[in-house]
Length: 132
Image (cartoon, rainbow, N blue to C red):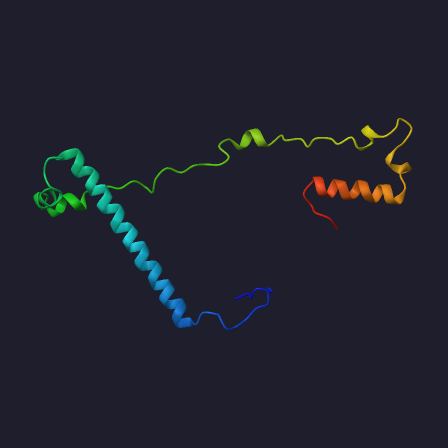
């Protein structure tokens, strides 16, 4: 683990047995989530079929084959992002006219080393590269 000064310390590291407990806990959590999803599905079916009957009575009225024949969706709706990749294929970068704000007779080559360093720094900052 990292301390407040970003120095690694072995004091707070997990042992193998603790990692095993976490892995088993994840399996238990996953099983709980699956059981919860099945229960929610059954409750929705109960509300559609017999909302006036109690849930326990409705469960007892069904035979075991009914629950074996239930089909579940394949995990839910998948959102694809970006939806259409073809419109992103022909992206052309914008051209930057660096000498647009200079006088008519000045070019980038005519800048002093300090001015050129300033322009490079501003470009790095505007493009999100940070200062170097």
